[in-house]
Length: 438
Ligand code: SF4
Picture (spheres, rainbow, N blue to C red):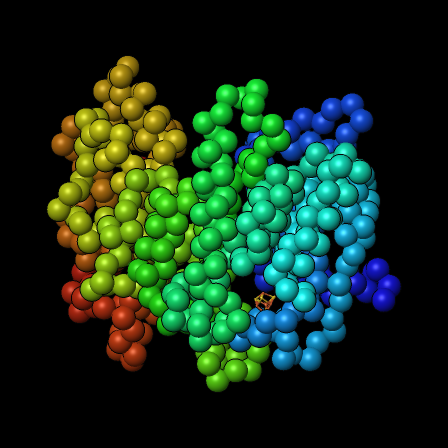
């Protein structure tokens, strides 16, 4: 098969893997080597369907021996199959790199013959790139769950980042939809990578030798192919961050590619808003010091589709607001919708020098449109503020959303909408908008 045809098939097959952003690694090129990575990260571009294609993103092969129900490459599908050779992938990477098209490689693979053989092929590819071609650019490679520990370790010394995709958020769903995968084997490489990195970090720098997965590891979960709630997914993500020190958990809205009775109907749209809410919640876990149990809980296990998780938390806990920006500690400022780590730092710095006024917040980076309902300054709130969660919700969401919400509540009683008392919302006049400092 011609190389261009292989690229067409295997680049297309790789698009469902969303865990390809980077980087966090600084690696300068030396004489006789090619490429470098910058700690600031590699730039990304996105395809029309929103997938990231910043790195040369390839599947080594799509000739899979497994039969995961949700996957286009499952062995029972009748699709064109192709496999690269290690040299082909190495040559392609160098070719694209030298033309300045890419800054690195994202290499994943279906399982060909068996897990060890697949892992060996990836190792061979990375060895050619690193040792023969002297490529020092960024490489993100998929760890193959179930492969021998020695092979995973060898791969880790060649790559910058590794990902082990857990794909589905529960063991039951994995057993049902990915019957060839061993749910326990999925976490083994994650654990191994974490332990190895820890071990090496104890060694003095001079004795460390080559770096091992310096940009850390990530994983990906498909959202909407199985029945788990948003709460279960956020809980798993929190656990992964704490236990395996993951750099990122990626969420991929389920895109129906196979007709299968075990999967949601093929006509349904990908749950993109749900994916978006998960990323927002993930941000709260990583940068805003929230715990999964604060974002969602057993009683309210799914996201409010009309409010982002932070605003949703704030209206649910409105007794903790308004927060006085003049005196509140940094951690409390972080919890105010419209205030992020940078603007919280700016507030803390600014108030050392002068008495803040609400009108100062905008120039300190605060998104006033959102924050105005939750802040006060020396006890002064925005004029016209009604300290009522329903009034706040009505003010936060747009009239269009409000109408959809009303309609959906009357017609379908979706769970996400039950947070709202629509009658009360309706009784609140939409004209009662507070003053906006903008
Ligand atoms: S192992 Fe499963 S998810 Fe991975 S390529 Fe094969 S069929 Fe697809």
